[in-house]
Length: 349
Figure: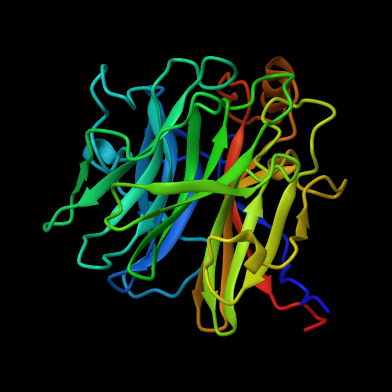
C-alpha cells in the first residue's frame, strides 16, 4: 500500500513580474532555494536584471526570525538596487549568457559552502542552438563568493545541455540530480527532458552520470528533503513557457525513499500533489511550476517554487494593465513569479 503524499495549501506569489513593484534592479525572480544558514533563513534565487542579465541573488528573513512565506528582502547595494552574489562573467566566459537556478550546499566533508547553478554559453535562451552547462560558486572565508572558471558538468553530443542542478552532501561525497536535454524547449516544441544523477568525491569532478527519470515521465527538476521517516523528493515538469498546445501535464509530484538514493528503484511511485492545469489555478502558475525547494522548521514545512503565467499577447497585457491603472508590463516572451505554499500531512496518513 502506497503512502499518500502531502497536501499543498493555496500557493501565494512573493515576487511577480506582473504584480506590485519588484526590488529595484530586477525584472523577475525565479527558482528560489531556501536554507537555514547561520541561524538565518536564506533564499538563493535567480533573477533577470534591468540590464537584461541573468544573475544570482540572495534574500533573507530578519536574523533569528521564524520561517515564513513572506517578508523576504533581497540584498541591495548602492541606490538600494538588488546586489548579485558575484559579478557578471566575462563576455568570453563559458557562462557569459547568464546564471540561474541556484542550488546551495552547506559546508560538508571538509569543503566550504557552494552554490551550483545553470550557466548559459549562448545568446539564445531557448530552442535549437541554446546551450547550458553547470557551474559552481565557492564561499570564501569572509563570506563572499568566488566563481569557478570552468563548468563542472557539461552535456553530451546527443544531449548537449545540462541544467537545473540539485546537489546534496551524501555519504562521503556529493550527489547531483540535473536535467539532461538537447536544449531548452522553444515555442511550439515538445519537451525532451530526462533527469540524470551523478556522484562526486570533491564536488568539482563528477563521474558516473546516469539516467534517473525518463523522457516519458518528463521531469524537469527536483529537490530532496530529509524527514523523520526517510527522504522525500519533489519533482516538477518545468513550465509551458510559450503556451504550446498540447503540452504535458504540469504541476508538482512527490515520492519517498529510505535514503537519498541515486537509484530510481529505491523511490516510490511519483504522486501528483499539485495540479496547475486545474481551471481554478491562479494565473501566475497556471502554465506550470519549476524550481521546487522545501524548507522545514519544527512541524512547519514550506514549499517554494517558480510559476509561469497563463500566456496572452503582450499588447493585450499592456492594455489590460493600463485600464486598471497598473504599471505597464515589460515586453517579454513569458512572465514568471516566485511563490510558495504550506505543505500539510495527507489526511490519509
